[in-house]
Amino acid sequence: MTEDNVSKIKERLDIADVISSYIKIQKAGVNFKARCPFHNEKTPSFYISPERQIWHCFGCQKGGDMFTFVKELEGIEFPEALRILAQRAGIKLETFDPAIRDAKTVLYEISETASRFFEKQLFHSSVGKQALAYLKDRGLREDTIKEFRLGFAPDDWHSLGNFLRDCGYNDQDIISSGLTIKREGGVDMHDRFRGRIVFPICDINDQIIGFTGRIFSAEGGPASGGEMEPPAKYINTPQTAIYDKGRVLYGMNKAKMEARKADRCLLVEGNMDAIMSYQAGVKNVAATSGTALTPSQLQLLQRYTNNLDLCFDVDQAGLTATRRGIGLALSQNFNVKIVHLQDPQCKDPADYVKKFGQKWQETAMAAKPVIDFYFFKLKSELDLSSVEGKKAVIANLGPLIKRLVSEVERSHWISKLAAVLKTKEEAVEADILSVKDDLEVYTSHQQEDSVKKPSIVNKLSDDILSEALLAVLFKNPKIFHDKIDAINLALFDPVTTQIISKLIKLDIKNFKFDDFVKQFEGDSALRIEFAHLKSQELLKDFTDKDLEEEFNQIKNKLEHRALIGKLADLELDIKAAEASDDKEKLVSLAGQFNELTKKFPK
Image 1 (tube, one colour):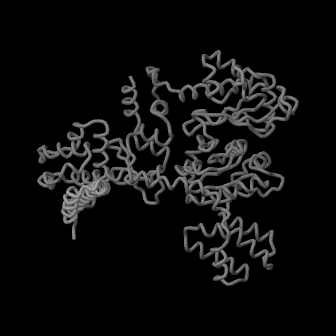
Image 2: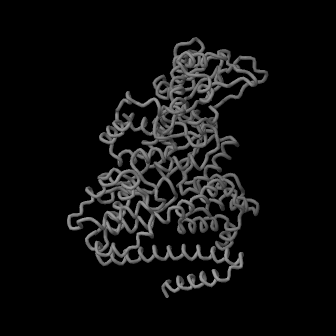
Image 3: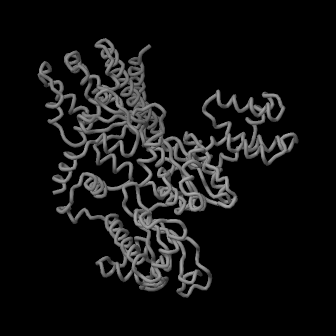
């Protein structure tokens, strides 16, 4: 039944449409190309073939069908990818195999069920209605409240837990969802969210994965329940199998297409900031939900745009968060602007929208490039004729200017600062280069991630050469049919050996790729598809002469690699013979070593 569902989904969905809902793609002849979302790159090496319904990156070597893409990008297993794509295709998984209803699927179901419970409480319970009135007083319309599925958690220890039990969920799954807490040393559990306005948090596919709860009581004080100290104003779902606060942005499920359309995303700090902005017409908005911005969140944003506007609270914590966000965003090649709330009575976008309404659209559009923003801010706050003022300007702007990719832009700012500070350009440039980089601390995670990446390519280097040779053969099999026999099949892995063996036996005059690939399945078929895509894209302008040269180069590299491997094995054997003082074996091994070295090109 699962195979039937997969076939139905593939019939209704096109792989280019699926991938384009996650990342920006552009037409490239019969195919599409994009910058790979799985590794950092400036030049696109990620290709999509609508004809073959596959994708492949020639940089990191990842590839597959639409299900593989969703699994890789979302970090999920097949059952979740199946459900996401089935929902998109409008297919009900009525015959969904219960055996693949994994732990994550249950947590999604519990989160959805809990959200419906919270929504009902907001609109129908007596205290919930007061919370609803509070939200409207904050400026939210009822249609917005319903669109974002806001709810209310009763000030009761067991109401949600008991409801979920009645729905058939067991205690362990309810606890694993983060919605209840097991009492220390006991067997009982109690609700995590009590007496709170609840904001459901969705993943990029609109599935509820967690919640934020804001304290509320009818009396306007903290929730009851026996706590000795006032509870936190906001609490969040803890880390679960489906919720990782460092990998999700509140409202991004609604903002993703708006961000792509505008080629810009506005990042705010709080959930209410995002909702109020959305209501006021600036819909390309997402929130960090009061947590520190992470590289993973920026990678999520980068699927849709490289232009980022920041508007965090104007208090000290917000200013620090803004600076941190700038450091991370610049380290990931974003173009960063700052949205400035010019009214001193408005400490965040939610306040601004409540006061000025749709004027927020003009304010958001007036975002200033990050260096301009800090320059004019410092200019108004400091005495630039004093030595201390000049040093402060360099200390604040230096780390930003150093990160500018454009030499022209960097030179522009050095000249501008030299004129304003009445100092030589050489002196300004020297100070900028030597200034302490307060943004460096914010990019440490990004640097740690980058250390891991080369291992992917090293691990797959053998596959890259094999794929390159197959690509050349598929580009024009007729000119290589007589030369394939000369290839030493021992140079390849078993899959490539099988593919080349079948090519040798073919009636090459009547070669048709579709017929050939049907002889394979699974990983073997995918290997052939990737090589064919490579022949279409990377070898499309090659002449027959170019192809022959490429063939010989790849063949030489394969043979060279095999020689290196044999020499490495001989070196180990020689060391073993030396350790055992086996002189006769040493002479034999040394002779073999010398013979192999003669085979290297002069």
